[in-house]
Image (cartoon, rainbow, N blue to C red; front, top):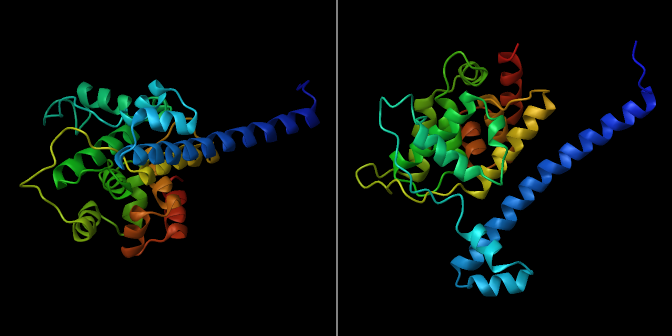
Length: 246
């Protein structure tokens, strides 16, 4: 028999949901804030000037401007434990998300999708990892995942997604950007924050590849535009994910 006061429990549940929602909004706002600080630096501002203008310490500005995003670790080589998921690659992913997202909540398939997004950007010679690359990473998810079943139900293949990405952004596989600094775009980071929110809304403790797909769609950026171009708007993706999860 439950001894908890029902009215207080209901209030606590609503407060918890509000708190989690605010946490995700804070994550999205932090991504945009850090992006603008980096832009100030790119446009000529010194770390000291930025720190004084925004009331931050010089050390904190340095941490923001020299992240986390810049990875110089070794690239994955075929046969080293799966597509992009060898220990060096996982170390790079942890570095990228340290202080931004609780990466420990990412299930293996979601980690594979994010690693795949990085690999796709490298293979295409693109210097940043955007929502279009996240979509490519999700499109490469194993066939037994909710994400793969949802995209199959929508009639969308990895080759189709890649074709649209190349048509939009081009590719330079003969002159790759190299394995060094390749930051995630603010839109990609927002999408991953929204993916966490989607997982919470669905009552899932861990974040899976289909949550990344939902995050991409809900951000409304290039990845969502590519899905729309392939005939799947936000409502269609939501319905396909719900159907595939049954």
